[in-house]
Image (cartoon, rainbow, N blue to C red; front, side):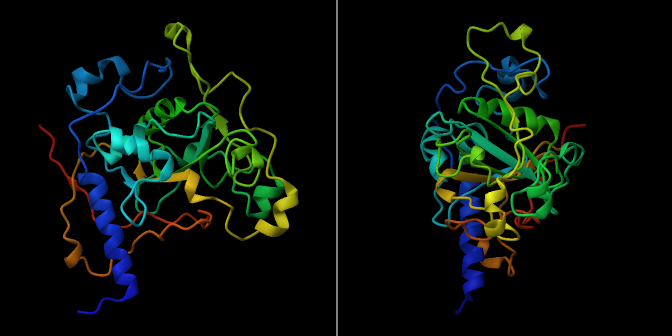
Length: 304
């Protein structure tokens, strides 16, 4: 039986998707090492996780969120170690520990036509460095929500906070905050015109005195903008992302619905619309590619 190239690609991506959800391991590590949850962080108290989600449960277990794996079914490079240590690929992508050499990270949440944005649209804060608006206005903010840090361990806490805020969409993250910290750090000024920052909360700090690690530190990528020297090369073209340092999560964010593991049979899916396979240069998500409309998670009835 002859399959078209498109069908083969779609099926391989669907299989990778299912593997990302079905991969399980009985082992886990102690992560995060300590709490950096501040008073204004959204969601359930970290210290109550075992009581709320069970001894081996996670806050994201019943969410529709899923990791995007490479075409060969492997995890993205900055998360390969986490995928070998955590019980599921989903847990690795949402919690880490990420491996950016403790040089930090930056993430962008973009609207997704196949996933309700909930509270995302009210807090859009950046423009990509491939549009006239993005280059000419450091305050242009219609492409999505950008946030990062210069410390790897803050990733867990930012993801958890923004998940529970309902900043829902397609999430793409890359390594490197300041200049010379990765192949394409945020401070190269070629990705986004602005980006919020989450500071490190140290283990010695009194958490009761920490209101919000996302504010009041003066460390954000603000009033800097895209570097105009790249405008001619990047205008209306892909931004220079490198998949060796990036990873992606689809259907990110909290919803009231609970979801079970999909059981779609790849052989019976009629010509699904799959995400574009990864490459060394990723097409800028503006307009944003949507998550595939397959396989639809099956809502789990909640107790009355």
